[in-house]
Picture 1: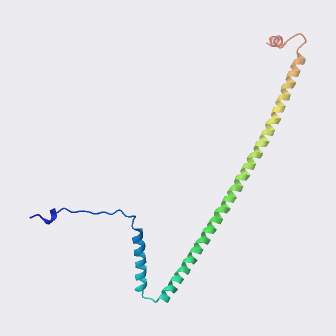
Picture 2: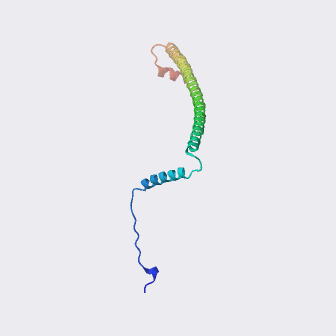
Amino acid sequence: MRDHKELPYIVIERESGGGLGAFVLGALVGAGLGLLFAPKSGAETQEDLKEHARRLREVAEDRMRDVEDRLGVARDGAKEHIESVKTAVDAGVQAAREARDELEKKLETTKAAYRAGVDAARQAVPDGMDAEDVLEVVD
C-alpha cells in the first residue's frame, strides 16, 4: 500500500481581479459588526464621531495655517532675493555704461593725439620728401 505522503496533489489557482470586491465586502461586514458589538449606544457613537470629526477639522485648519505661514515666509524671502538680484543687475548695467563711456572718451583722446601727431609730421616733412626719406635722415 502506498504511503500517504506519496499521493499526488493538485493546486488550483484562480486569477481574479485582485479581490477589491472582497475587501469592500469585508470592510462593510466589519463596520456592521463593530456597530452591533459597540459598548456605546448609537447616539453616543454619533456624538463621539462628531467630536472626532471636529477635532480632525481643527487639526487640519491648524496645519493649513502653518502651511500658509511658511509659504508667506518663503514668498517674502523670494521677493527679497529677487529685489537684491534686480539691484545687482541694475548696478552692473550702470557700471558697464560708465566703463563704455570712459573707453569711448579715451578712444577719442587717442584718435585726436594720433591725428595731431600725423598733422605735425606732415608739416615737419619738407615738400618733395616722402616718409621714407625722413626715416633715412633720422637713422
